[in-house]
Every structure is written in structure tokens, then in C-alpha cells.
Length: 228
Ligand code: BG6
Ligand code: MG
Image 1: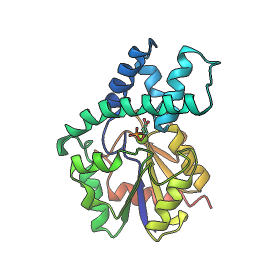
Image 2 (image 1 turned 60 degrees about the horizontal axis):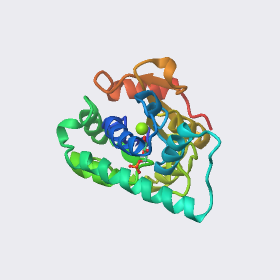
Image 3 (image 1 turned 90 degrees about the horizontal axis):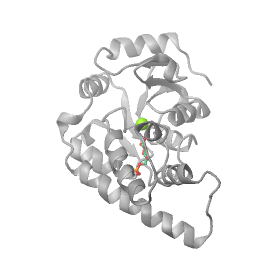
Image 4 (image 1 turned 135 degrees about the horizontal axis):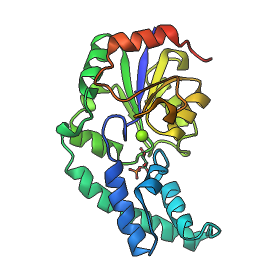
């Protein structure tokens, strides 16, 4: 029996990775750091500051600067990147919702399955507002609510609690390795979203929601039992 579905946002509901890429690339260029789309792939699911650290280590893998001055510089850099990222987010519209997602959400809610967002992004609410889909979720847990980002399972466990469910009655939908690992640590079943099954160690991997509805979700529920 499925009580709740917990959706990651970036890469599951909407593809914002190009926006993150463009904004990080602009910052990296200012810092004289070469930053590629492949590098950007590795940032999926990481928090903003972890992403910045990863980019800074591209220039110097041994330069892990700590201390108050280094930290406040990093916060300033991350803030600049975020202002460029938000320029893209402001132009998002309902048409940008990934194919099949909205129908799937409506179908689940009509079947009495609760829905939540659990996203590491501190911009999750702005993204959801631009897509005009907040009414399709019972709760939204974003990066402002947790001290530790995925792969820490905290964000998913908060979502389970807010849905008034148990980990065993929920299913997570995730596109990033860090998120799939967080689902495993939370002992919640996970459906990965990726173009190839080999790309994610999830209980099931699907390319998206165009050919995935309530019928397929229920067969997954029957086949893959709660790991707890
Ligand atoms: C995740 C994205 O959802 O949110 C990451 O996959 C991103 O790429 C992270 O770094 C934090 O996002 P934001 O919007 O708080 O900078
Ligand atoms: Mg994601």
C-alpha cells in the first residue's frame, strides 16, 4: 500500500541543470576556472556550498580553505551565482514541467496517494511557484529546512513525518546519486529517473513519466517491498 510519494525537484519535475550550469560557468569564468558540462553533472544533488567547493577544487584540489574569511568569501560567491540562477528561474513557466509529470501527480492524488517535495534547493519554493504546481503537493521540504544535504537522509525523513506516513509506505523519486543514497539510508524505496538504468542504483530506473502512471507505480509497489 502506497501512502506517499516524495519527489526530488531539480531533474525530476523540471530540468534546471542547464540554469545551474550557466550560472556556475559564469562564476567559474570570473575566477579563471575551466568548468564543463561534465563537471556540472557531478554537482547534481549537492548543496550550493558543496557545489562551490567542488568547483574551487577544480582549480586546486589541495586548496581547502577554511576559516571565517574564506567562508564569508565563499558565501559571497555563492550568493552571486544564485542571483544569476534566479534570473533563469523567473522565466520558468508551467510549460517547463517535464513531460508526463503533471498528469502523474494528478493521477496519484486522485488515487489518495499523498505527495511531497524534498529538494536540497533553497530556491525550491520559487521554482514551484514559477511552475504553478504548489497545489499538487501536500508538503514541501526544501534546503532551508535541513542542516545536512543529501546523501544525508534527514530531508526525506522530515517529508515522511509531514505526510504522516512511515518510511515503508513511501516511495522516493530521484535523479541524483546523492538522493538515491539518501533514500537507501532512510530505508525508503526509490525510483530513479535517468536515461539509462545503469546510471542509478535505485530499486527501479525509468527515463521519465511519459509511460509511467499509477498502474506501473502499483506494480512496482507489489514487486519491490519495503527495505525496512
Ligand atoms: C539540487 C540540485 O536540487 O539543489 C543541485 O540538484 C543544487 O544542483 C542544489 O546545487 C542546491 O540548489 P540551490 O537552488 O539552493 O542553489
Ligand atoms: Mg535532482
